[in-house]
Image (cartoon, rainbow, N blue to C red):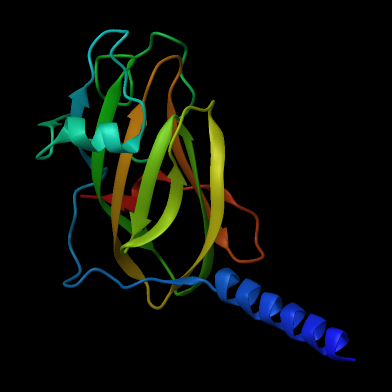
Length: 193
């Protein structure tokens, strides 16, 4: 009997922990609400020619140091997988590029949304300080994870991304959708800085 009760308590504890993990991340709108320009601000640092390589997010962060060098703004997050040797985002180099991306994402209505970042290679992305995408390594253009966020009101929300591309091809994209609805690529008009 004691073993059965212990097993039931362990199962209930696991179920409660799973429910807590699955709860949507609560977002806070930017305050005051901005009137941003379209796109996202970006600054870059370049890691040099091989064998010097950005090995992960901490190396990218260190390379950017106090913020990096301002680059041409991004149009949004619709940078599909490139061919090897193509420039990374709006930076002229094609390998060992670190990017500090900042701005806002606009939600037109309150509710529970699903967000999904895609990257090639590493990413650390937050909305309102909540982690919505993380991958610290090298990968092809793939989804990192899908997270649920609770948007309390329509408006602009703070967006921060640390990104690096080691070598090969590069991509940086984002999908979204209301919970239970079909996901789609976030349009460029949803980003501002």
